Each structure stands twice: as C-alpha cells, then as structure tokens.
Picture 1 (cartoon, rainbow, N blue to C red):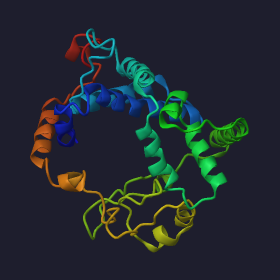
Picture 2 (cartoon, rainbow, N blue to C red):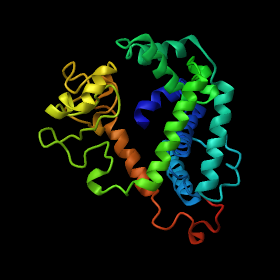
Picture 3 (cartoon, rainbow, N blue to C red):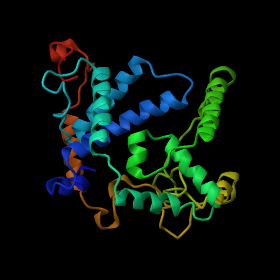
Picture 4 (cartoon, one colour):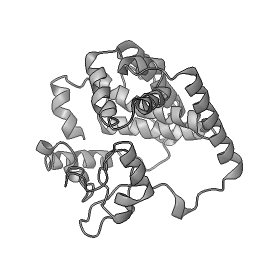
Amino acid sequence: MNYLHDRYRRANKITDQDLLHTLGDGLAEILNVIEREEWRNLTDVEKCALGIFHKNLGMDMGIPFDPLPSQAEGWKDGLHFGLELQEWTVGYEEEVAKPTATNDQYVRVYVDSALSSLPSFARSLVRQMLGADLDNVMRTSLCIESPSLPFSLVLSVIRNLRKLLLRNLTLPRSDSAAVKLVHGIPNPETNLYNFERKGLQPWYIKPTFWSKWGPGSFMVRVFGGKVPGSRGDRYQPRGYDLMTIGPDPQKGRGIEEMKSDIEAIRARGVATCPFSQAKTGGLKGDF
C-alpha cells in the first residue's frame, strides 16, 4: 500500500491531509455506524483500542499527525487520540467536501448505473437509503438527495426495532454463525483467500452453486449486481493475493519495498503495554 501511494504523494496528488482524513474517516465511520445501528454503544475502553489501532496504522503508513491539536504534547491514551482524530476529520470534511461535477459523475457511474435495471421508484429509494447513512456535508458533496420524512421515519422504526430485538431476543453468535468476510483458510486449489459476499460486485468470491444460485445471489441479480464468475477473471474469483494487490500495471511490483516496511514495523514493535510508564515515563508519551 505504501508503495502504491508513494509516487502520488511525491507528485502531491495525494496530500498528507488527504491520507490523515482517510485514516480518520475509517475510525469515524466505525464509531458512527455502531452508534447508529447497534444495540449498544462502544465503551471508552473499546474506543481507546480503536484509537491505538488507527494511530499505529497511521504510523505504519507514514502519515504525519501534525494537523491534530495535541501533536506537540502528545495524547493521554488511545481514546484521546481517537476522539481528536474524529473531530479533525469532521472539520476537514466541512472545509473541503464541496459538490463537484466529478462527485456527481462518480455517483452516477457507481450507483445509478448499477441500479439501472430497477424501476425509477426503486432507484430513488436506494439513493435515499444511501443518503440516510450520510451527514449533510457528504450528501451535498456527493449530490445525493436527503431521504424524505416518511422514509426517514420508516428507517428509524426499522433500526430501533432491530436494536430492541438484538438486545433482548437474540443469543450471542456461535463461532459457526460468526460473520467472516474472509475465509479462514486459503482455497486449496489456488492457495489464495476467498471473500464472502459484501456488495453487488463479487470481488474474490469463489464461484460455487450456492454463491451463483442461492437466495442471496437472487437478490443480487434483482438489484443489478454480478454473481461470482461473471466476466471471467474480472472479479478475481481465484482469491485475494496481498502480494499483488493493486491496479493491473502495478501487480507484482513493490514487493521488496513492502518487505522493507515490514522490517521497519517489526523493529518498532512494542513488547510492553502501550500505556506503560516504564516505556514512556508517563501517559503523555508516544502511546
């Protein structure tokens, strides 16, 4: 990933603030989705863990944290870092996320064209569903309409009913029922890892009778999606290969650079608790 980003960073086509925003957006969306959709909010300890993970990820990607207010004196813990990164990310979006023709074109290509086989009222509902998951800044930036009041009420009832059912009427998931987006073992035929369905395009999904003709695939077809094996190898049905990720011209390149990054990350590894005062001399150190 660092190799793929490097030439764009050197050409200033991807700025440090862009990368910091992408890092912060990943954190902010986790917090937003859980608060909006799940039966309980995250605890401060869980938010702290998210903050630690994203800080380490940012360091591994070489993303400077200079725009964050506490960069100079350091952060007390992962919670402090995570909430500060989330706040900065929201402010940065308000500053730079403006409606443009390219944003509108992006939605038309990747949303409207995927739903072109649906009747117009269904396309409108899907766009409103997408809009319901965005704040006003991002809806305006992407030229997506806000959901109507009746539709917002319906979504609110469904979400709150789901929370009620999950909290009071559902048992904890067993290991066999756990959500696993990536298979735990590689495909024995290719030695690559296949994915489970997570969108309308079947990236890295192994073509099987169930994945092509099961109930889920039927719904995918209804919404204009593709089933595994569509268009030959277009969606990489053999599986996911981390060592060759990227656009076709970049496949297989940057492996030596990645090995160097891995060694640097290992050398920076911390064997003690990230809050250990023995390591930092206090909680305000580089947790």
